Each structure stands twice: as structure tokens, then as C-alpha cells.
Length: 591
Image 1 (cartoon, rainbow, N blue to C red):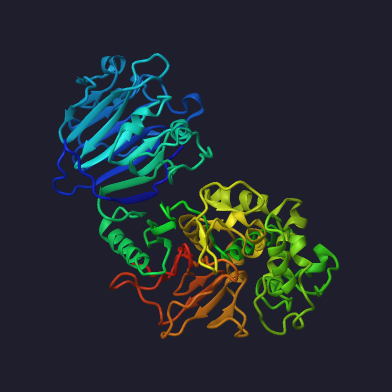
Image 2: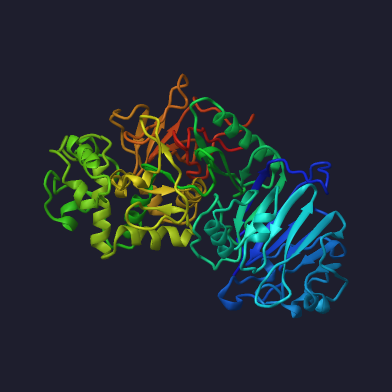
């Protein structure tokens, strides 16, 4: 496979050791090749870990030379290998590298075309110090390692079945761990003394149970390491990343604020993501945390309908009754277009007292789409007469898509959107297992809760406002929706065509298919929609100067840039997820 050029930047907390003084700050850039193979460089020296290995051996990750970063100077290239199994080491590929030094067990050193370095507690190669730890694995000579480089410490596991060497390692900046090692640490009830835990040697697409806020990298992700007080994910340009992350950190320090997760895609396609604050006490918010994205869900439901229209399987001007038959309190002549642009006149089921009572009556209940339709009242007005925001319309749109295709909306989301766009951090609560940890939220009574503990509330949004996702996947989704051929050019025109807004949403100036445009007053530039029941909130901006808030856009002079001299986004799609708690409000402007 070709490794996608996705960049992640980590600004790690200060780390010093008795053996290695911190010295001047230097940056290390680590590219994940696959399995336990990393390309790590400071711009002068390069370290390769457990590479080259046999691509695809034993069902593990495949790779191509074209996806491996170039070696600046083979005379300053060090290869560190844990053992001789072919998913870690392939001798016949060494000739492509010609490293100046190789640290590893005897069979690896013997196959090296250049100088082998004995694995000891203090092996040196330029500024790199390698501490080898003999660890058990399959009766082989096997080593795990602690690497020290420019004051940073990171742990490399190999395939050892035990976790004692990892638990014993102290003051790590990064611990690279295998899924089975992570499980061993969890069973022992131990803690990894590391500022960042990254899972390696997982099968492509493998679901890894989170422990101690661990993250699972994607092939091609680049981690930029340097000492610093905060962490950001996304840009190799650390000066911009620092400014963006500092904005998040300042926000998180305000009393009453809990946590923030944000993601931005810049003009050149580079993505920055950052977090600050916490999910709950003693659990920092992580970039992969899933957060309620609210009515951004509507853009995904609308995209499925627009795709089906592109395929001539339905028409946007079809009456809803053509697909769903007669329904109580649903005018049969309402068109699919009117459902998407909020001109249907349907009652909004979320305003029903019976609906809110049902949520509290049985917290374990999982609401299905048909259940939610039982809470709608009589129509508010004749279809097409005006606009009024309603969640009911998107429940009906989901049911239409299911009727047309014979598949569930969960399947349609995955097959048509998530899998093609590689969105792996999205969840429809109540209908699938979370692919990543779920961020905690604050109730109105200021209690910190896991949203999935009250499934009746988590499932109440369904196809209208029910999805949870990471900020970085929402960024990728929005960018793809507006730029990457998710729907045809004709459907783009349909989607962007606005009808007049009724004004029942403050600042709303127009409504399209699955989104709307808002203009916020300068006096209150950060006004945004809040959920009724849990204080989590999400927002994604729109291209061409507009900002998308929970299925809506905003534009106008009231937006303040995060960076001095930044300009409003013009040609990229929704790229920011945020919330009141744990994800808080943040303006998005493109630098």
C-alpha cells in the first residue's frame, strides 16, 4: 500500500534524565512505516526501528519503498532491531539502506552490510543513546530498547510477551507498545510512566482497547517530537502549531472550562489537530476522543441522500410518501428537498415533553428512528411556506435511504462515507461498538458523565444529531464533502442553493440541503448552539467565508482569527469540531 502523507505534531512535556542533560531543544520527526517500523530523524541523523521487514508477513502491515522517507545521509543512519522474525527484519532488503550502524541481536548484526553495534545498556551512535533490555520472546535473542536523543526518551517493545521492562522504564516521553503488552499492563493494574502511549504492531484496521489514553497511529502519520508544555497534532510547521495550541491552552485554563479539541485543514491540505484540558479528572483529552458532533450529523445524512440522487435511485423532488407511505403528522406531499432545507413544516420531535420524559424514564433504552417519530405533533405549517429548523426531517431522510437501498443507515454511513474516506473515529451510539474512547461531558448539574452511560440520551439524535466523532475525522469529512467528490458537481450546486431563513435560529441567513448559513453579530462572535441535555457542543466551518455550526454555517465580520493576519477560509470545507464541554467553542480561520 502507499502510505498517506498525514502529519501529526506532538509537543511533549519537559523530560530530563540523569544520564542525558536536556541541552538545547531539538525536534525529532517520526514517520510510522508499519508494524514497529519508524523513520525518526533530527534532520541530520536518522534512526530506523525494526526495519526493513517483509511487507505483509504474517498478515501484518504492507509497505512500499516509495512511502519510506528518504535517508538524508546513510553515514548517519542507525538501524535498531529487536529480533530476527521477518515481520521485524528482512536481511535481503538491507542493501537498499546501507546503514552506518546496526544495533540488534547477533543474527541481525551478522547480516548487516556495515558495522554491527553490540546491544548494551549504553550503546552510542552520534547523539543517539540506545539502552538495550534483554526481554523474552519465543526462545530468541530479543531486546526491547529505551532510546535517548536530544533529551527525549522513548521505549521500543519488540514482541516481548511481558510488560515488566515497560513498567520499569521511567520518565518516558513516548512509549511505543504492542496491543498484547497494553493488555498485560492493564491486567497488572500498572501505569506506564510516559507522557504519550502509542500502540504499534497492530493489524491494519484492528480495534485496540484503549488504556491510559493510548492512541493507534495510521501508516504514514508523522509525529514531530520536541520538549514543550503542551501537545498539538497536525502540522510539521511547529511555529504555527505552537500558536494554535497555545490558543487552546489559554482557553482551557479559564475557570469553568473543561476541555477542547480542534482540527484545521490548511490551504496546502496540511491538517493540524490539537487538544487541551481533560475528558475527566486524571484523564487528559486526546485527539482521538469521540465527542458529540450534534447536527453535523445532518451533513452526512444529506450526503447519503444526494449520492442516491446522483445514482438516479431517487429524486430530491420525490414526495416522502413515495418511499415511506402515510405517516401520522407527516404531510405526504413533503419532498425530500424540503426535508433537507427545513421547509417541510414538520414538528420537531425534540421539543416534545413526552420525548424528554421517555429519555429519563429508561436510561438504557436505545431509540430507533421509528421510535422517535412517535413523538412528533401536528405540522407547523404547509410544506414550502417558510423555513423552520426540525430534527424530524432527518430521521425521515434516514428511513428513506434505508427503504431505497435495503440497508441500515449505519451500513450506509460506513460503506458510502466512513470507509472510502478512512474515517475511523465516528460512532452511532447504541448501534455499534465505540472505535475509540468517548470523551466525558458535564450535565447541567456539573456532574462529569460518560455519554454512553445514558443510552436513551445518546441514541436520541439518531440520523439528525446522533453521531460522535473525533475533531480530526470531522475535519477530514468536511474537507472531503466540499472538495473531494463525495457528491457530484450537480449535487454540490443543489446542496449549496439556499432558501430564505425564517429567523427562528438567531443569525440564520439562508438554508441549504443539510446545512445553513449564519451571520453572528460582532458583539457576540462566539455565540453557538448548545445541546438541551448534555453540555457538549460541536461546530464545523463552511468554505467561502462561512462557518458551519452543528449543521449550520456562520459568516460575517464578527469572527476573530486565531493567528494574527489570518484570513477567513475560502475553499475548504468544515474542518473544526468543538463543544461546550469537553470540547469548547473556538473560531476557525485559515492562516
